[in-house]
Length: 156
Image: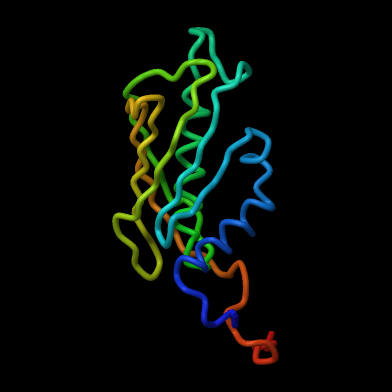
């Protein structure tokens, strides 16, 4: 298959694989990342002992990191590099040691230079843990070239 003939879903999956190979934070925390298509991503993470705080529940920073990771994979799924311009989270319920959390990111709006993405973080039984909204900013660069081999522009 030619690179320039990738479906949007195949493009999102290729970006996911390339990003994850360099995503040391997600790897270190045992996150499992799945792309479902352009503008969408799902990330799973189990709450481990070192992630708990003085209340014996998952520290909010780890929940934010999980949601932010799903946001990152969803907004980068078009093979255009993006970064966070801002984000906010509302914590709804606590997450307990040993629970597997699921962060599902969905695109709300995407323009040429920015986007808005919502993420739901749930626990067992689809119990809502947190809601997150991220704003993306497009930067220069792609994860892989869409140009057919031999046609890349090498102009400085």
